[in-house]
Image (tube, rainbow, N blue to C red):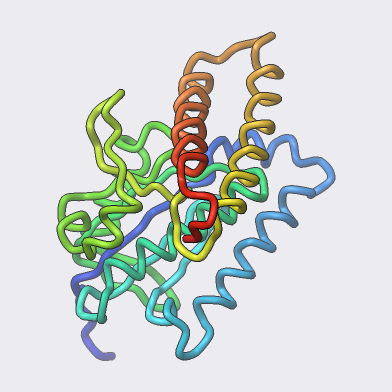
Length: 232
């Protein structure tokens, strides 16, 4: 058997927020089907030959999503950032929230398993550092992204810990009108969620949702301030 080895990758580890409760209360398999449909769509997109994301590897287990691209690929950092932004937006539109981390590190990945220090680093970023429904970025990723991506889709969480995170509500290919509509819809769902939780508040969950509330408000103001004819 050939000897295998790790290589340098950009790695994203994502998690569907509060998925344990979603699974436990999914008595009619509604969420099972919705989330599987999202996963199926993205597997088809990434497997499409000659598509911009075709060099990205995708692994899914329940609510955990792993994406990885070799750093040697052209515009590797930009591709994984744009792909993660599109996936996060897709989940949000469907009523789900992602948390995660993106880093650079050593990884081995094939059809059977995944291994490497980079996987551990990305998992730790998601599970212990992200804290809120945001996708934080390592310095290596920040420094490897193009100026165009960084200027538009990187935000600093000044209110909490000054971490740089991926602002997927400013992803490319959408109009001002689209974003205003989708953010407004997400705000309405979040308001209903906060009201439902207010009778038996869990401060840990409420803190995450309040972070999201501020995130939506900031991005809604951003899009409303743009010129009427400006498209993204």
